[in-house]
Length: 257
Image (cartoon, rainbow, N blue to C red):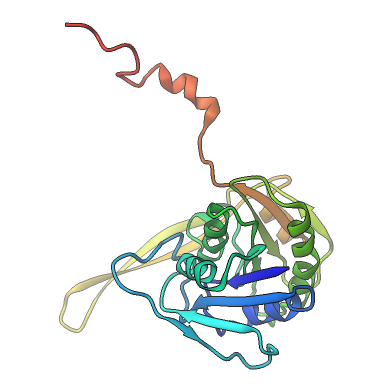
């Protein structure tokens, strides 16, 4: 089994290292290709306006796992990893420092790395850990579960255009739940300030907003379970097509003059 690992927290992230250590015990070959600096909330961006650097990097404590850092986005890393390192059996991303629940997946660089692998037809999984300011980070439970899950997914495969978004609770797992995507998101706020020259600048921040919806990723993680959510890259709202046809102009035959 050949595994390509990326993330959005950067190549020196403890979550990535914990994941790599666990996966190397069950994989024949592990390749890490990750951003050289943190790329959180970068979404599914691809760098097309400048060249990218792909630099070999020695990571302490990973037993000779091949690693490269890229001065680009998580999606860039997956593209370069596949093209330079050969096609893997699975692309995995994480373990992210912080959960990626609900609407978070639209801006998450962690999930975007898995999305990029999925667009290439490679089974792909994103892993994230819910963090708390008063609790020490512990990736061991998530990494151990990832090492169990990944070989199973490689063996069984995933449907086309489908990836897995896996979120771990803080601390030990009470179990695992198959979940739906929640409506977890952020209530944005914008802070306006001025620089020393009196010119305005803006800082965007947000407060997490979520409800305890049944069978969702947010509820599972809050209750202490790992959530496993299958996501589809096909965003088409098929049930709305007929209704939309009634209001969109120009769908009928072109009138003859």
